[in-house]
Amino acid sequence: MRPFTLLSGVRICEQIGARIKRLRLAQNLTQQQLAQMTQSSLSSVRRLEAKGQGSLEFLIHVALALQAIGSFEVLFEQAPGSIAQLEREQAQALRQRARRPRSIA
Image 1 (cartoon, helix red, strand yellow):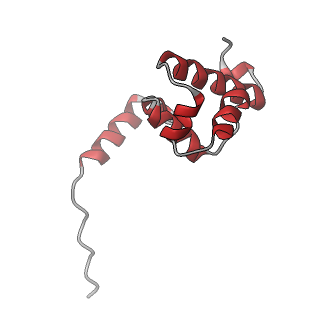
Image 2: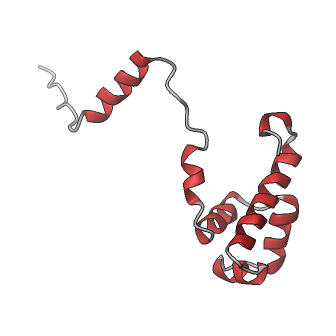
């Protein structure tokens, strides 16, 4: 399988559909069973697997049903550019209370 960076948008969608199909088959599920688990139609599952077409919401429902939702955690996450940036982000995360507004005299 080639990295996504070398593929067109259509090919990336097809690759994601193929990965979903492999994951479904590895769990010994039929397309009909996956459709029932996601409360969707059989044609929606078929279209997702064949062409990678479907809504983001549907893709998330499928990932939940296939226990693959962890893959979304890194989606669009930006890595820190430097150690200083990482330290600033950690310091901001540690802060627990907001400041009181200054009174105007």
